[in-house]
Image 1 (tube, one colour):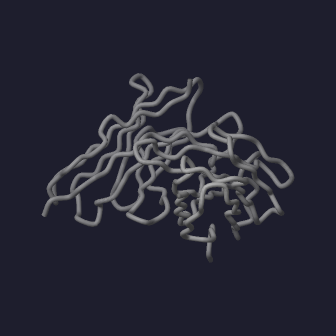
Image 2: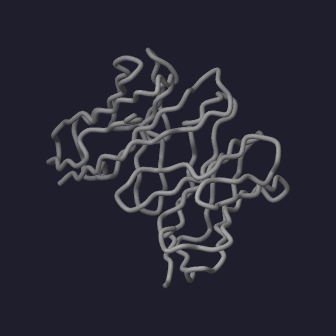
Image 3: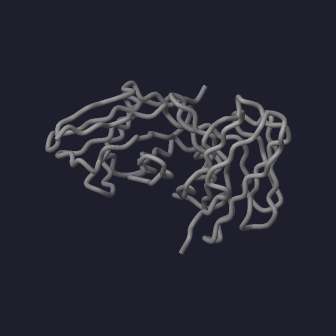
Length: 115
Length: 116
C-alpha cells in the first residue's frame, strides 16, 4: 500500500523554467493538499482540493497553480520558477469533507532548488 | 489570526531522560490538534491527535500529549527518550469547521537531538 506518492523526489530548475510536481494517493481520499516547508517556518499550505473538481488557495498560493486531475491525482505547477520557490514540497491527503476525526497522510516530499 | 507556536527551536536531551515539547495555539473554535514527526529527508508521520474527549492522548512510539484548553497548549511528552527519537517535531492545528484533517496550520518545528 503506497499511500501518497510524489514525483520527482529532487529537481533543480533554472529561474524562469516551468515544471509540474505530481502527487497520487491510493487511499480513496476525497481531499488533497500541497504544502511547502522552509527552515524555521514549518509547513505552509499552498493549495488544497476538498473534493474532486474543486481547488482553493491556501496561505501561500502566489506563483503556483494546481490541477485535481481525478480523485487520485493532484498536481502542482510552477509556471515561471523563482529562487524564492526553492523549498521542500509535500503533498498530503485526507478523507476530507463530511467525515470527522480525519487525519492527513503525507508523501515523502520533493526537494526543489531554483538557481 | 489562527497560529501555532513552538517556543523551542532546538532541544537536546540525554538518552533515557524525559522529554517535553511545548506547543501553544491560537484558534477561534475547538481545534483538532496533531503532533507529527519528521526524520531527516523523510515525510511527516503522525504521532498522535486530539479531537475531543479525554485530554490526555496516547500516540505511537511511547509519546503522549495533553490538551489544556485554559492554557491553549498541547505539549508532547515522553518519559524516556531513545536515540532514534532524534528528529524534528511539528505541532499542528486543524480546521474543524470543514472537517478536513489535512487543512493544517503548523508550528515552526522543534528539532530534537539526543545525547548518548
